[in-house]
Image (tube, rainbow, N blue to C red; front, side, top):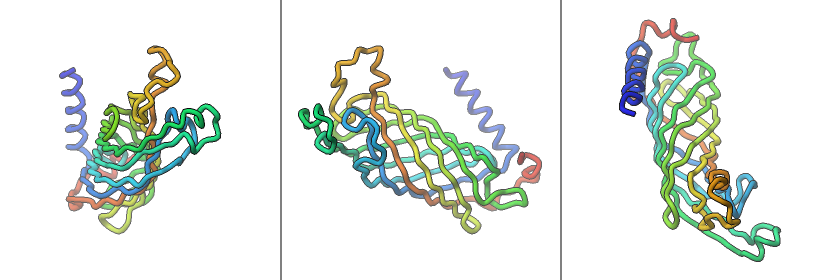
Length: 220
């Protein structure tokens, strides 16, 4: 394991030496909702406000490593659905969720401040990594985040982004209904709860006076 970590650090440091780099810090605002035993598939069901902080390290025009801290509520109620079983069960929950994530972003177009002749002001991106979610009333769990979004450069130092993401948790207890259908352990992973987020972020770039003479050569 330590050799793997050292290898990742070597790649990270090496890339930073040859590519222009910078850091962003900002805020996240949006809405989160839950998918699980009470709400199997309805998107944006019972969404609740979510706020957080974001730090992003730009390793070059294509890749960025970011960490974020956010919190918001998740909730659900069987009585919101017409299913007879749910109407009979009448389960409900509400919990405050704290989320800490480390993710890698990939930009589909060259995207990095300060602007150069080959930098794009707009770029779609994808992101994934590892999260830890802590619930106020039920189980805490690791989760795998997967998201898509788009970024836009505002002026010289500001970046706005819109993102829609899903987190696959490793627990079926965020809603307090762990394995209600008595699934066996082999199928437990497929019955775990999901957390989804749709929101915007606004970040301010730090150290935007960094220069790299090789920048235009490394942009593909």
